[in-house]
Length: 250
Image (cartoon, rainbow, N blue to C red; front, side):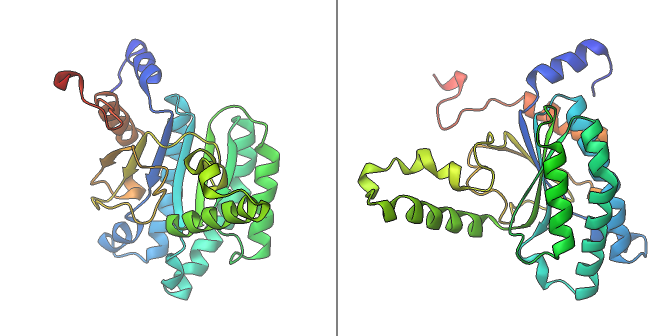
């Protein structure tokens, strides 16, 4: 673990630019304690606060948190209502703090199914923090990567093919990121998933093509600054090859 000023500087110099997190384990955390699932989601907010603070401290530029999947609407109505209540609470309580901390907030995902007041809170938070120059916090809300890719393809077709630009004339891979919800943000360097599960769950499928994965057995409500630091340190010891040979293979 980072224990002195010199080590902290070393970690900051080598930290991933963009970290994505699948926050998993709220329900199991609550079940282990004989509590309702809502208690796990509530405690998960504290883990979000710790992780946002740690990301900024360690020099991460972009942090993307998978908060609500487009598949999560199949959960019990009572749980969805509680999740939306906590979302309202989080946006109301944290927006001013983000602004004071120079954090820029962006929410990705389909907003059509969200209540109007939640959309308004999101828009207000994004507007207030849009010019901040510190950490960019991206919340994936009602998000699914397959749907995002299909929407990007549809957007490209309507933008270019309708104007008579044929596929052979279009450098699709170059323009494709512009039509994703993440736009021209850098792709994640590191993807962390908590709770011991080892799958990507329809999250940033295009963007994570060359991300390093780190799977933690810690349930999300228990995830601490030290756990985040462990993932970053593990990342700094890896050799990213992007399809090429490693140094030892050349």
